[in-house]
Amino acid sequence: MLRDELPNIKTELPGPKAQSIIARRLQAVPEVIGCIYPCVIKRGEGAVFEDVDGNIFLDWVAGVGVLNIGYSNPEIIEAVVKQAQNYFHAMQNIVVHEGYVSLAEKLNKIVPTKEEKRKTIFANSGAEAIENAVKIARSSTKRPNIIVFSGAFHGRTLLAATMTSKKNYYHGLGPLPDGIYRAEFPYLYRAPKGFSQTEAIDYYIGRLKAVFEEASLPQDVAAIVVEPVQGEGGFIPAPMQWVKAVRKICDDNGILLIADEVQTGFGRTGKMFASNYWLEWGCPPDIIAMSKSIAGGLPLAAVTAGASITSKITPGIIGGTFGGNALACAAALKVIEIMERDNIPQKALKNSEKIMAIINEWRKTISSIGDVRGLGCMMGVEFVKKDKSPYPELVSVIINNAVKKGLVIEAAGTYGNVIRILFPLIITDAQLERGLEIFKVSIENAVMTQGE
Image 1 (cartoon, one colour):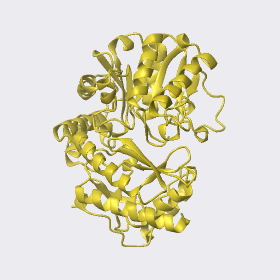
Image 2 (cartoon, helix red, strand yellow; image 1 turned 45 degrees about the horizontal axis):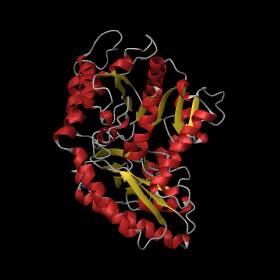
Image 3 (spheres, rainbow, N blue to C red; image 1 turned 30 degrees about the vertical axis):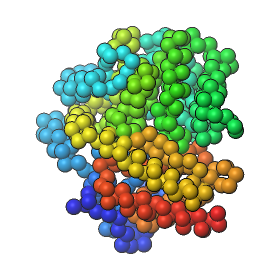
Image 4 (cartoon, one colour; image 1 turned 135 degrees about the vertical axis):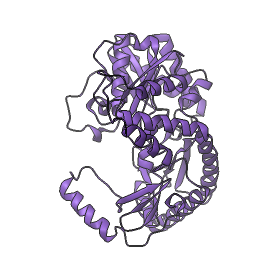
C-alpha cells in the first residue's frame, strides 16, 4: 500500500508529466502564487504521496499542517461518502443540519477555554476563524483595539493580514484596518544578549505593557491574540511563564485572550490543543480559533468561546454561506473520533521527543544548527552562520537537496532560516527514520556546498 511506502525518486525532477502540468499552471495561475517543489501530486495515503511520474515523496509539510490525520484516511472517506449520499450542504442560517450541531457539541466539550460553558461557530478557513474571533471579542467587550505580536501570521484577508507581522503579506493594500497594535513576541533564542530565561520573559512582558503606554490604553483593548507556537514566525513556542503573565494582564484589564490554534490544533503539539498546556498552567484562553487539520483536508474552521462572551455578540455580524458545510462537519467528527480512539496526540509527543534528541545530537557536529525548538510535532530547526545571523541561503539548499531524495520540507521564520517539521502524525516508524536520514544528509551536503 502507498501509505507504507518509503521515498523513491525514479525520474529527474520535475518528471515529464509534471513538467507539462507545471507549464500549464504558469499560463493559467498568477505567478505570485508560488510553488517551489518540482512535483505534481497524483494520489496520497498516510504520510506519503505519489506524483504523476510515479515518484514517491515523504511529506513533512502536510499541507502546512492540514493533514495531521494523513492523506486519504479510509474512515474519513467513508464518513464523507455517507454524508454526500444524503446532501452536500444546508446553510445553518436557513435550515439546521445535525452534523453542525454534533460537531459544535463535541468542540464545546473538548476545547479548553477559560469558561467551561462554551459555544462554537463555524467558518471555512483559518483567516475567517481569526476574523470572527476578533469580531466576537470586539462585539462582546465593546472595545476597538487588538494586540498582536512580532513574527505573527494570522492569514491573508485584509484584517488577518494586518494582524500578520510580515509586511509582504499586505504591501500595497492600504489603507489598512485600524486598531491593530503590535508587541514583541518572546523569541527566547534571540532575546537580548546575556539575559537569563527569567530575565528575557520579564523583558518581553515589559514590551507588551509598553503598548498600553505607546499605542492603546488597556481599557480600549478587546483582545490579545497569541499563537501558542508561532508558525510562519519560525515555530517559536510561547513560554508558559509568559502566557501565564499575559493571562493575568488580560484578567486585570478586562481583555480577552484569543489563542490562534489554526496550526497548533488537533493533536499537533502532543495534546488535542496547545491550549491544553495553558489550561494545565492555569491560564487558558477565552476564545480559540481553529482550522487546518480539523476536517482532514476539507475546508472548515471554528471559533469556540465562553457562552457569556457569545451572548453579547451583535446579531448579524457572524455567519456565512458555507461555514459548517455538511461534508466538512462529517469529516471533522470522524477526525476527532480517530484521534481520541487511537491516541494520535500521544504518538506525536513520543515522536517529537525522539526527533528532538536526534537533532540535538546533530548540533554537536553541525554548527549551522543554531536552535531546535517546538511543542510536540510542531518543531523548527533554525540555521545560522558563525555569528548567529540567519542563514536562509543554507536552508534553500537543504530543501532542494531533500526533495531530490524524496523528502518534502519547507522553510519558515522571519528570515526564512528555519525548517519546519510538520509531517502527518500517523507517519510510520520506518518513514520517520528514513526522513531523518534524508534530512541529515541534505544538511551535511548543503554545509559542504556552502563552505561552512
